[in-house]
Figure 1 (cartoon, helix red, strand yellow):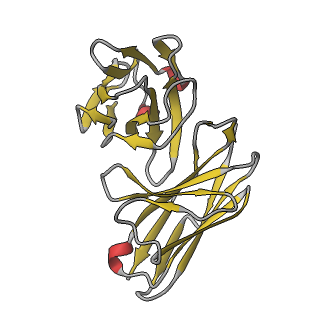
Figure 2 (cartoon, chains in turn red, orange):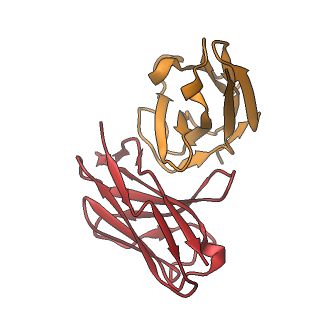
Amino acid sequence: GAVVSQHPSRVICKSGTSVKIECRSLDFQATTMFWYRQFPKQSLMLMATSNEGSKATYEQGVEKDKFLINHASLTLSTLTVTSAHPEDSSFYICSASLRIRNSNQPQHFGDGTRLSIL
Amino acid sequence: AQSVTQLDSHVSVSEGTPVLLRCNYSSSYSPSLFWYVQHPNKGLQLLLKYTSAATLVKGINGFEAEFKKSETSFHLTKPSAHMSDAAEYFCVVSEGGGGGSQGNLIFGKGTKLSVKP
């Protein structure tokens, strides 16, 4: 089946550090990648949608200058949390899907990244 | 606007007994509906999906769900729980419509399933 690899799985760093999270589709070309944030014991909240070669579309309330998303190729998208602060600590999950004839195929999820800002 | 409500935040069953996780949805269109499972510190795994074909959908690991339009429900069931089923389960509706297409996903708040030995 389709495999999405997310790296790193866990990050612990000091406040003010910028952190980059990678999301790779290993065995298919992902025309669309999604970034979600999950707070403890809560559901996933969509942060942004990125299409290969174009700017990401951010959900309302998500700071695009804070959460930089790059989808430079059909197999890789990155999320950079710039100048991270403790309130950015969360579980970040990416997913990837392939768009065929204006139809988005089911999303395949990475294993997530636990970000802890001290 | 589409929404999904998972009626129980926590369900506890004994191993070998049936599992029922309830989900109701609201949709203006013919929805696509999904159940995902999340184990601790892991991403989501698709259990099954409804895409306007058969109303009774069979998924992986013995799970199945029935789409009931009259009740706007899509409850997840399994005849006999296994210890490895303990996880968080999310009911999800897609804005993309039917036919297997997935638009943006709208997640329920999740149901934590505990399985007692």
